[in-house]
Length: 242
Image 1 (cartoon, one colour):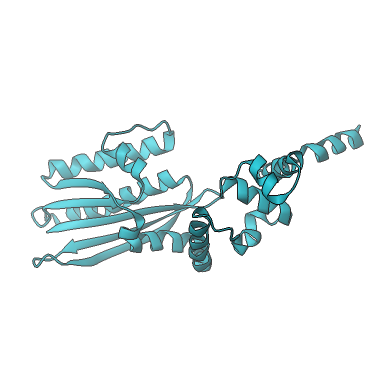
Image 2: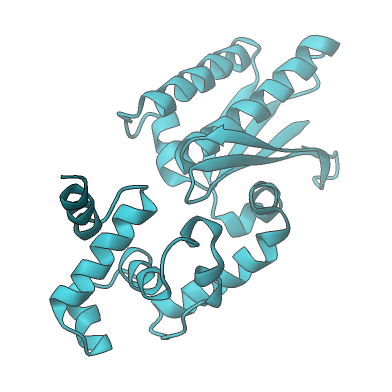
């Protein structure tokens, strides 16, 4: 019997993360059946740490199952699919990471890998696009966004159209809770620069505005979204306090 572990990690703009894992078993006729689904919120982190944690969680589940039953012969091999190419490359030794948090999780993956190899169970790690592990992807993002996941999915569709040249602006950017303290202009300009990849000079031309105006609005928006006071207000407060 072979086991297929489909792993996905999700991360939002507040750096909150979640994981989604779908564990499948192969039958004698070659078909695959779902054995277990795992999803949960995993605190602060990055998409890479969430992805790696989903792999650790899946491997721990299988290891605990083997240790509790003592049945090593039932499993011939394990294939781990994940949708983060960088994480996969780090695990198989093609790349390195300078992130302490990710490095710690990679070490844990390698310890689990050692357990399976010593148990004569083959273990492969393979990158797969999220469309090929959609159930794990939906579990992770559904847990992270809750009832807003449908809105998130629709937003992704709009963003794909935007990258292909469509000028649609997703209305959901104006309803993001983390941006509720910004003006509509600030949200729009920060979205166009950060998520659509516009240069401020090009955006100024598109909007028929002066470069300095767009640059100032963008700078203020970034400072406000980071919890910092815009320079103009900071100067005013200092003058007032003096």
